[in-house]
Image (cartoon, rainbow over all chains, first blue to last red; front, side, top):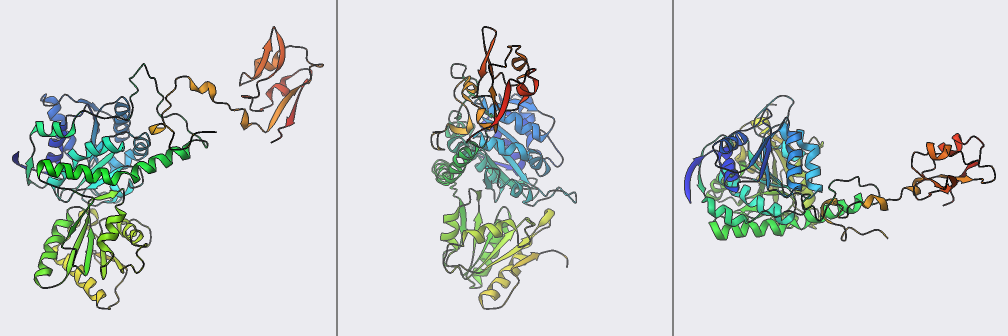
Length: 389
Length: 92
């Protein structure tokens, strides 16, 4: 193990170097991050044996990844924001063909207005595409999760995107424990693919027309793969922990067990919010936090187990789902708690759109409002924290 | 009986080469062509015009229709110079 000072961009690129995928196809759309740029230097310097395909768009990048994965290669790419949006059509194809592709994704806002900074609207836009989604709290987790993602993808036979918050993580330097190349290689083993088009003794057809008589069965099969993914993600997170000392699960509860008021949060904001929870605890206030590490598949059991007995819950959304009744994480958590007979009241806080900073004081305000609600005060269901009125 | 979702191969792939030969498209039809052999002069205009290669010809003679692929477009009936082909409603 080595200690390095790396940004999330560099850390994810470093993970890609150690994984040494067979094929990386990528295009640096604005606002691309530096992951591909770093990886391209590894290729140029002969540090990887990867076939690097610089295509003409993100749509083509994912298409090339699909072709390579169908041939049986271990395949990765990286994108952000508009780039992921441009891949949208092809994301569904990768998932439905059950190809274990991994994307290193940097969470950035979607236009318009033009913005290159952090929010989660890009990956929320790909929520229903059939990809497993893992959100990182810090760059260490981004690095660790990229390595785990390869293994998860090759066991679930579903593609995985690992995300890190734009700028807050992608461009901020952090102390990272980097594994030895050999450790990564051993952890991952040989690539596993669901099929290969290159086996000429057993020719197959990939991606044929699939009409009313079969399409539904194939979608049902894909849905089953997603339903079976949580134990795979947990198993790989545990195995990673046993080998390297850092354990990962589907969710990350923080001082939650005896908490009365909890916030649900994703990405780097969890780090800030944990500090606030500590402060409130010192003041004797029973505050807790649930970080959603995995959004797809939705860890329903963990949502229920961790939140069912709370007095009041606040869900922090770094995206506006434009549903008319709250952000996308709010509606997910709300749906998850529906089966709890006397489910706790749930409030939504949309924050940080387009990279707007979220400060500890603001998270404290959120907790204060939630504690007020717990004491019987009426507060609005959907709130915008940090917006100018 | 077609396979259920548990029996199908992963990723909607087809594991068998040349399997399209098994794909019968005749059930798309709502009207089917019926031949009146007494009127037919074996000019084979129907064979030339059929877009689905569904006219059965043996020794230069019109023998009938390959209903497993005929989609009932009616081009054969339209082109037949002696009106030997009639389109009749397909019974379900």
